[in-house]
Image (cartoon, rainbow, N blue to C red; front, top):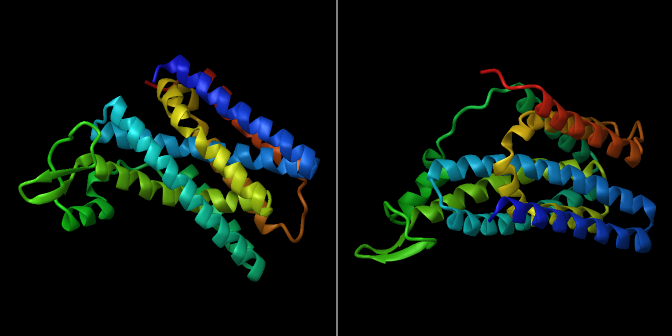
Length: 272
């Protein structure tokens, strides 16, 4: 996908989300529209962090652009499915056991701490438990065959390395869903708003991936910014029964952190 075309697609998806939010404003009122936009922004930001992992995975496995497209499609489907499952599970838990809010808040604070202070380790995706398990269950060919996931070989049905990549991507979807769902639940617990803000944040990831891959330096300080946002929403969730932080203030804070992260990446040069 050409870079300019990817930008247009991203703008189209964002525009569609904003158009949908106008419908939320009309039918559900300004408060729900504000919650949708804030939740969408949080989920979109976390999705960008998810894409950084995708880039690392694709570079490690040496995928062609055509293969990246196919894996991204499956990754997005997985992200939607897993997030919806976590949404239903999370909202049900909160309604039945209010104390679970504090667990979610603590989970977000821990995620923020790890993101901010733990040094990133170079992980070999090919050595993960899931991939090793896959190789024990089904034979895996040594080479790719275009964008096929399975091949008929002398040993029977065999998976290609591209199928292994999908497994790695789907496992990352699960890990990111663990962070993203508590984050949106700190903004709103309205099922319709939670689900739709997540779906709109995920649907544009395919195009966004090719934009980010071309402008990685602009997002060099995004991870610390995401850590601050996670810490904020985690604290908001922990203090939900004590302090009511208006959604508008949350939105302004999140926008300020995102803008600061991008501007810092733009003007502070990386040390050689």
